[in-house]
Length: 407
Ligand SMILES: [Zn+2]
Image (cartoon, rainbow, N blue to C red):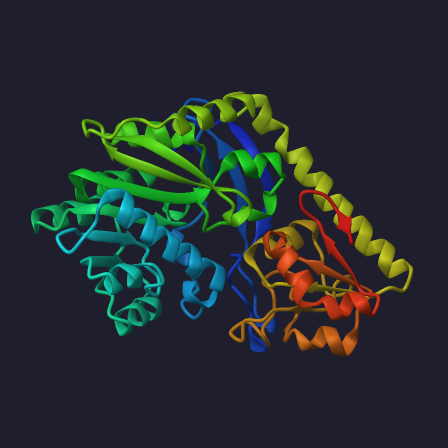
């Protein structure tokens, strides 16, 4: 396989998690006696442009299960983040009734509704029918298509280039990152700004967040790699902000190569952090598998020990990252009999691969396990706070990443 950005042969493995089912392929009871599809989950690194990427194995569309869609508006924290973003960008770029904002992967309109409310014309691009319908229902105009160069050019021909193009947690998920980036360039006005938010590869490596690896996530991005991808499409990065979301994300500000935006000092600072963090050094990537294995082995050791001692362990949060961790560790219901999740759409189903049943959070109160393993470590503090009554009754909380911690 060759690099999806620069075409160089991919000779180095960053992480090999064996085989796993798609992380969002939650199972119904009747699925449990049917075969389950597993795909290789192997991540490679390009030693020419440093793009970290999934190995090709199957058509991307085979992975997206039609009956499960994530609605961004279900997270209060994310809604607040989107509202702050809209305010900040409106001020910083001086947006108004004569401006035009495009969001790629507009989901259920969680972000663009803020621009609609301010009277700023906007357009969401969203191929998933259920979320697109939800966006339209709250007054956000939506184009139900996949975004890429062809659509970017069409928007330009129709005179619908944007002053601002937003892409939150979509850039790492696109299979053809060059085509997508050329689409951004085509759909952007000469003086327009692109903002993209994605998890920062630097933090993934630093905090051993190997459980954020899953098939639908095609790229693991550094600013160095994005800078090269932007340049190849006639764009440049003029600012970067670090964000706490998803265990450490970045927001990149891009513009046309010839636009007047002055490069901000943050760009150089974060590029320097990446150099210091070893992101231009092959050995950093080659050392990552051992760290993932340490996390996996420690979790497995803990679960086996509790079983031997006759203690009970349950999990909280049926999130994608939990599926990656549990499937890599080979954990099954004998070690972890159930997981609780607040999302009604997941309750009554089973985790892909491990087949651990998903129950309502009240199962924790009823069964009072000795330990609760919090799978989405990024919201561990929130989960502990919400379930304080369990700690008062002697239950202890556990997180596995970046290292096993019992509190
Ligand atoms: Zn490359």
